[in-house]
Length: 151
Image (cartoon, rainbow, N blue to C red; front, side, top):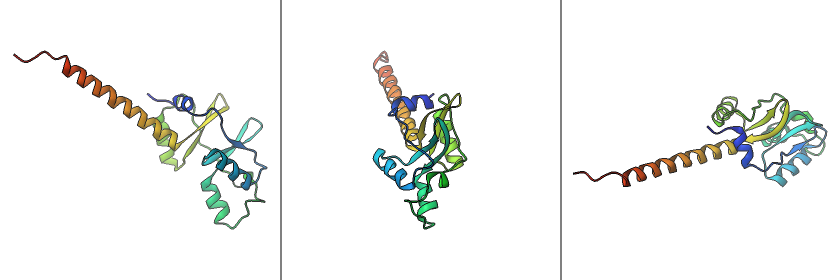
């Protein structure tokens, strides 16, 4: 069964983060640089929250706030749903669906070890299904070729 650990191994080891005292504009620049949809908000080694494109759209843009003088810490999501490296991809998919979220910080023994996105989860499931299909096709064609002729 595919786990969060497996997903993290496939990803770049860099986890993009931002300090709560940085501006929304700086967060947007960082997300554009890394082509990502969310940043973990950290102070030192402590995970404080997450800031996403949705947060920008709903808490900044629609409310007429200025991204140059609004701090990430003012609008970040503080109620976090986290997973561990041992959790299954199916568990992540269920959490994301149930809670309407697209990013899950990954914690191990109270320490941040990464983040998985809905894209990571979907890609993991697709890759797992492809492997299963290839194995079944190989088994079927191998079994068919090795059958003895009917007499």
